[in-house]
Image (cartoon, rainbow, N blue to C red; front, side, top):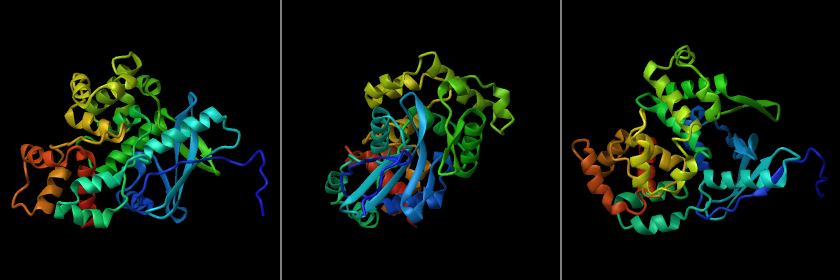
Length: 311
């Protein structure tokens, strides 16, 4: 029977995905490590997640639903009935970016599949792609908050910031937090964040970075046009933004494929395990080992991070 379209029918746009893609691995990861830090509501029984996406000058709830299998994946983005076509198209493009729809893992596997240590990971993680943040400001805020904190407490602080300065949408009768924009965070005081258990320094980094966005010292479109090295030089001039923060921004907001966060403890632990080293490698060791992973160092790093979760 053909569905009858009504004014309540969601706007649904297909999001083509370059295979392989395993949505089950995505849901497995975020069920295990927690998803509050990304403000994503997972519904694994439906292979769907819901999050707020900024498009058309505002925020709207978008349900991303997956189907098919690893070699023939499908995805769609569903938005509220009545969403204007231009806004729906913008939101669908954000979803495609967020789920790495255009990332060609086959090229990654071909490049590093000759390394037996990666070949074993590829067998276990075939079709695993990064889940990106669609908004670079949100990504930078989460990165600054997460610095030197465990993931659980960082997620708590991120959620508290969203409750304080963001807004709440309704989706299928349930509340959906919208991460605040730079203007909303810039209006906060340090004391307001201190009252939420932010340290003084972290409160300063969060608010001062938001103010740098508002006054134009950080221009996300300009960052997007920069090379990795240019972005590193430009952004690390700001207080509270170090090399690791920029690497995370370029990976998790812009999806840059060839970043190597050599100082990251998780990566160093994973390399130690996978390479069977007696001691944890230094950042310089990681740089040397990771040179062979170019131009896929981001995904090599991601698969090594995932190896820790799979143990």
